Length: 137
Image (cartoon, rainbow, N blue to C red; front, side, top):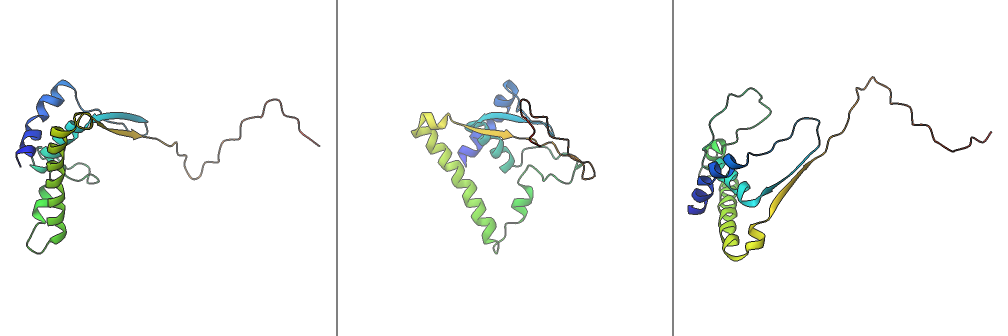
């Protein structure tokens, strides 16, 4: 638990100096996020530190683990296993930072690709002309 608190306490220092990049719809995007920054974001979510935003779009779930914790009961073995996995994640991260400086400085690479879609009722564009080709009769 101390490592979770440590990562959560770093979030303001990290993101005040370098804000988190985000992608826009229908645009290609690529970013590298240091492992420690990801850990800080997950720690804040786990501790439910983010303010509850107005739910304007129901397609996105809450960033906090509020609903996750509501689902933990004595009969919910799946939820308990997930909780153990999250705690193990933070335990491994803190061990990693102590043992391997290079791996601790690694980053997550996020890459978004965008496809241009056309409406169903629109016919495909004609193929481009082939330059330098002869048509055989």
